[in-house]
Length: 191
Image (cartoon, rainbow, N blue to C red; front, side, top):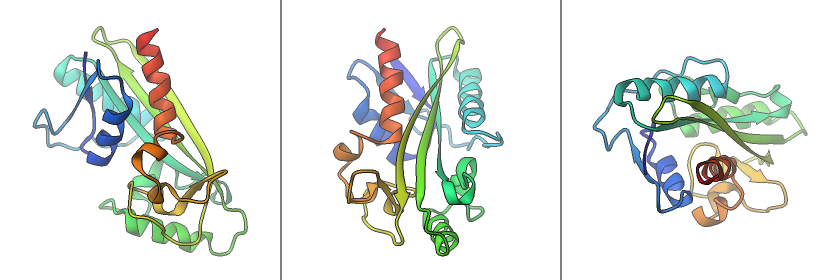
């Protein structure tokens, strides 16, 4: 089975390809030579995932998945949330986003946060479905590690002493928000 993953993010694609069963071939927008970015104009992660999936489904009429992920920080009333990728403005820059987050977290003792991933799936007939995964953790005061992407260097999951960026991809994939969402999606495909 071939599914289009509506992303240009090579880090995300690599993580997802490692998580899905071998019977599913995940191809990216780059594999289709589609260079356009799909504007993420939704007000929720669900809105953005569906927007991306619908755009690609209309173009290719093939099964498509799209996801949106946000880091939700308790002390910041859920920010950066749906705006995680562009928290520090355009163009998206992970280091600037983390620097802004760490700056805003300096005066609070509440470091609780969670990552949330929402996957939108549209099958060959156009039926839409949403899947979700979350992981709780905390924001640490400095960037640590060089693996992963996004906010991984400042996020430490509960019960661990390593950030996502300090973990191997295999270790991260046993617990991450994205892995949980993809597990639910994979289970759905095999039901």
